Image 1: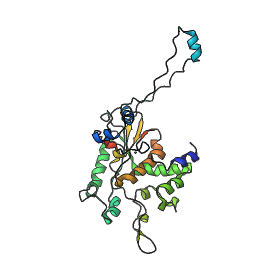
Image 2: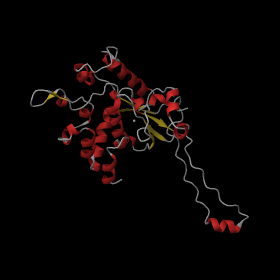
Image 3: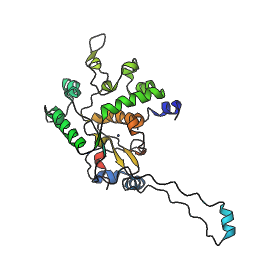
Image 4: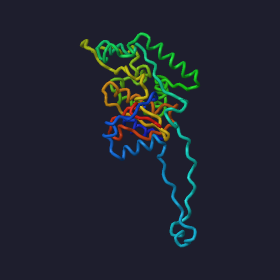
Length: 275
């Protein structure tokens, strides 16, 4: 893919993997029958094209009219996932940190005191969870690691500055200094900045709920379903995940088969179950 085509699409809306939930009735009611059929076919692995049938061999004239017989279809790719209850092979996680909440706490922009990542043992609990996954033979991918590789890949393609200017214009002045920790608001260089008058200058949003990675997207048998959150707290997380889905080399083999934002609807991964 050329750098020009990448530059034209990096700013367009473009996902994670965790415990599923049943599709709410309100979601089904809001989708057109075409979109419902598409989602059902994707999660069931049924998005396939019917192979063209050759004309009857007994009708030579008809065969001549139809041209040469069709070529055999290439072998189908094995499904990326067969069901949410099948053994887990690979998973995307984001380990929370108290650093994620420094800005949110300062401006009282958290839901309430029961917010799970406020708990002092949240980091240790999540690390234990990741350790159990690894001991079970699951390949664990961390969002921050994928972000770092996505930044490098965007630079290699020559579209990093274009994406940064579109997504985070206040960081675009020094693109070489921006890294994964900056995008996750964990970089102290960009926290609590003030302008010349002494007023607070907001640069980058925190990601207080990125640990629920399933909400950002779901793997279906045919590829990746990219979600689109309706909540303002998660819109920036959607931006980051779209960037990762497009540029992280570890995810390059997963085609995006359904993009909720491009379809003009709100969808979270917890609304989708692959059965």
